[in-house]
Length: 182
Image 1: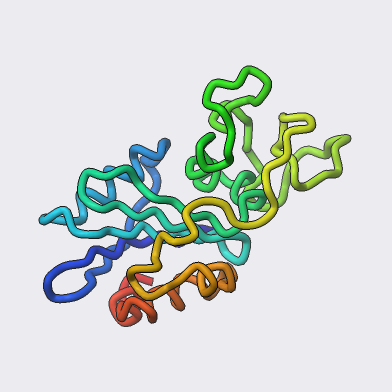
Image 2 (image 1 turned 90 degrees about the vertical axis):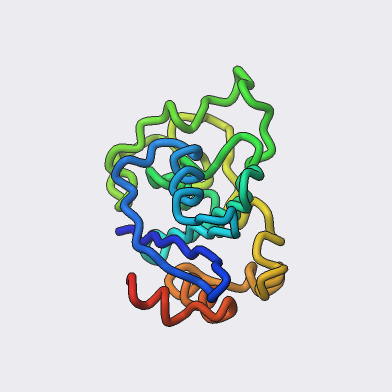
């Protein structure tokens, strides 16, 4: 089960909106959702979590490239929305490397809830269908994504899925507005 919300910074503080992810298939779709939530190209955060498995933050500031943080790449790689966030750049891979299959091409059906076909590979740190190509177990991305907003690298790394989004919202002064869309 996923929860996703947009927090858009305005002159009057933060505004939250629940967001539907049904039509999201690419990182560009996430970025477009964020840009649609602001009028003045202010900061917009897309906060997403999958139950107690992982959480992610996508930050969009105007027309700049999105900044991304994912709390647990291995867990996110096994979820449909998480794998969208795990770009080659975020994972430190060369785009188009023929030895590394694109995560978008992997069949992730049934793996979101831990239900998948049994495989001979017992290493949970490997992306299904990528023999020998491990996805890091733990955080990846921009650890300073929220530093100027009051959540430094140390605090971000200490957060755990399940309570992370509430903690982030509290630090931003947006806990009440986030709660309205939860």
